[in-house]
Image (cartoon, rainbow, N blue to C red; front, side, top):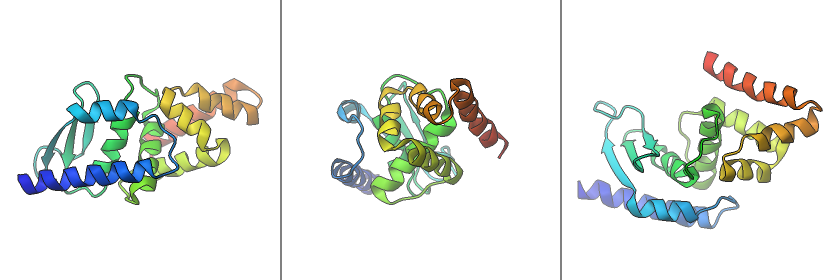
Length: 169
């Protein structure tokens, strides 16, 4: 559908403009490369893609068009796709949604994850979080926590407990 494709293209351009004019300090070189070959498949809630998601291997977004803010959320996943894994899906979704909501003032479904992500941003500072996301290196978070909690194993345990709590919630 041409109208939908035009709308998504317009939203992507708007997203990029907002991102470039924001305080978000992420490496965008990979995003610009991925955007050239990004494929977007759309559907509605009642059809194939109940949940939207980004396939990192194929560089494809499967988008539920009935989910507000999902497109922008998935675009942040494209930005963060540097071929590495963060190793904590709960925190990755929280940071992803937090960035999407700050860039585009949208909200999706990861409210609890975003709350935890905001706590980490407050405790550690945004620079450490941006470094964690750019490098896909969770040890930046645990080392930052270790500066507050003297034992690294305690900081690692805290990060693990957050993920365990999220699974139970």
